[in-house]
Image 1 (cartoon, rainbow, N blue to C red):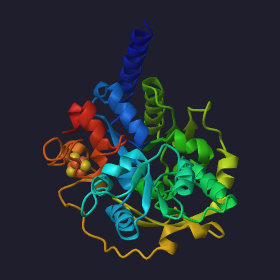
Image 2: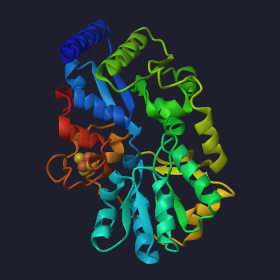
Image 3: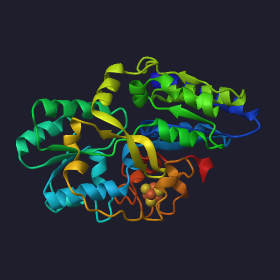
Image 4: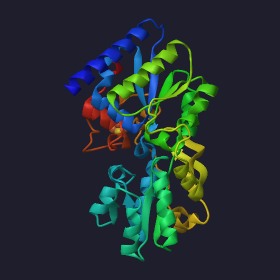
Amino acid sequence: MKIDIEQKAARKLASDINSMLSKHTRPVKFMEVCGTHTMAIHSSGIKSLFTRKLLLVSGPGCPVCVTEKLFIDQAIFLGREYGACLVTFGDLIRVPGSEGSLADLRSKGGLVKVVYSPMDAVKIAIDMEPKPVIFLGVGFETTIPTVAATLKAARSRNIRNLFVLPAFKTIHRPLKILASQEELTGFLLPGHVSAIIGSNSYDYLARDYHKPGVVTGFDALDILLAIRSLVDMAINNEARIENNYKTVVKTNGNAFAMALIDEVFEPAKASWRGLGTIPESGLALKAPYDIFDAYRQFEIQVAPTADDARCKCARILTGELTPNQCGLFGTECMPETPVGPCMVSSEGTCAAYYKYGGSFFES
Ligand code: SF4
């Protein structure tokens, strides 16, 4: 009964949205910034409810997808040359590097452990002392406070064999680049990241770029309500940041988590798949926590290699293409045989399209 009511409500909302857009002269293109939204949108089938006048594209919010191949190669180098135990979240393990993945390294006897929390790395480091244990630091503002707390715990316990290979990302700088794209109408803003940084932190999108944004949760109805708000603002030529996820996201975010980040990290340039190197879009460890920085403690001799030119991940992460515009999608590239990270990650756009299908109107 509940599902039936929700389906009816979803169809009514989609019908309202389509009706609003039918009177609007131009199509609208919204970007869902967060990988969890990408999966929610595809698993719920929302895209199939819209006409050609509404296009939803994915953004750079899947942390595994935006991490460059060089990082995987550097991690493998550390495992191979220094005998380090590499500690990572699950998705990263199957991302192809230049000469295989972390899973391949493990199958050849390398030490690679999958954890659910960075704090698990502390216990692993204690158990394996003096072997170097290196946590692969991939993630956005949602993950970073827990890494900061982990390093504080490691420092207070004087653990000297734990390190972090940092490839952390922060969301505002790439959003500014994307907001300057004329064809992008507005943003579905992330739920989890916004819980840390706060809904007010996106004000520049409306103020400086005249792009509306709505922070929303992950149910189909939440997403549809957010899209209706975005369409309403678009057809009235308005730009505001709305917070539709107030139970989780506060105006100013989570002060405790932000203070943790500030205590351990400082802004640094970061290299993004699809967007290149962006100043102050990442985080580096600052003193006294820089003793945990694997880049500082190990000499890592790995030259960058070119990505497989046939993989369109980079252009998918910036909303320029959709996966069914990649010639490898569903043929050479599938979840069991991924060519790029967008097919590996549980938040990847190609994985979402493969699992749930894309929109009829995009091909
Ligand atoms: S389908 Fe595979 S090869 Fe194509 S863009 Fe996605 S991950 Fe890359």
